[in-house]
Figure 1 (spheres, one colour):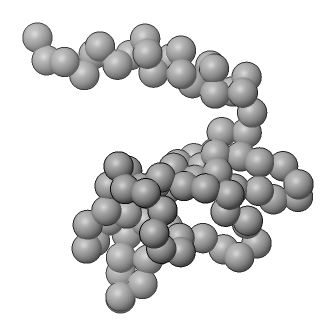
Figure 2 (cartoon, helix red, strand yellow):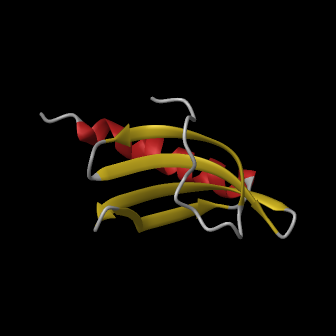
Figure 3 (cartoon, rainbow, N blue to C red):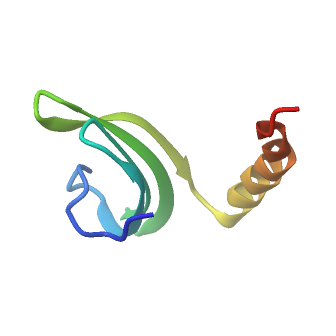
Amino acid sequence: MVEPSEKLPISDFYKVVNYVTIFKSEKWWEAIVVFESFGKRSIGLYLWQKRDNAWKRKHKFNIRNLEEWNKLKAAIEKLAPSLVSK
């Protein structure tokens, strides 16, 4: 993981609180972002693709609260063992 070192390609509408880059190449950038809008914080899972020398958002998935996070975490932990081929 890469620590924050450059401005994310996110709309100025959102206040970026913190982020962690998961993967970055010349063409793809994946990051987990804590951002604030309308006084509420969310966590966003972002994927950008570089096209015409500019980062364009390809995917975004938001986690709005701890209850939602706990449901997602439980589902991922249940399914994660399936990543290992038998």
